Image: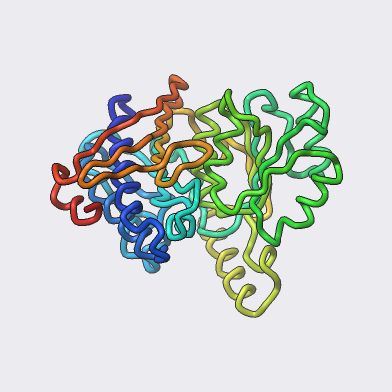
Length: 336
């Protein structure tokens, strides 16, 4: 994958973020997501790649845009697989809350795990604890191994967990062990990146979130030389064994079988992101722990983008000023 493509991918997440920002605080997460999807798709189709969406907005029969298997790009240039999350944090965007991002990861053909849109248990650490994690072991044993690898007392570990009812027991266990817990409402891609950033105090991310976000996280963790393990979980194993949850869960398990993936099996980082020749781009929509949010005055807006190229392990922060009325007309309708 040509390195000059990286800046093109930053333009894609910038457009998606600007489109999502138009719906900031308006209480309509679906419209925010739809606008970001449209802008992202328009921009992707201007890039000279032969791209395939492998992690997107659903299956071909479930979503009209950026579905799994959709072809994007001009069809000329490098053949690449793409994982997208046009808005990570649609609810946060709709409610005007922190840490909403537009995110994408691009890798060589066959680079990313093809997984259904289901739940994934995730354990993520930075480079200092690489090789110290094993989801087959109890959480406490993993934390002790991580602390040992980082040469710090267990009580000095900082673990980020999504503040969801399914994590109440894990959060209580962590706090009883004396571990510092950052419980966040949403946004585990941003939180996973913080485990690998040199200026961050986050050591570990643990919890159950979306598998698509897990694959995006795997791409950037691989690029930053961190470590991650995941395990696909059916809905009724996470949300409770109701008739509806079991129906959805059984369908997820059938999709796993069709795709050649074993649910419940621990997945290593190199099974989720098979190469470090990846480009990751994230643009802030609202101000957060990782990136500043968009500010807008009239037809002018500023964005901050995190652009990571795995092959060289280069991390760039790009601050851009956009004159929205000078954008491509097809994009303007979603951002103005």
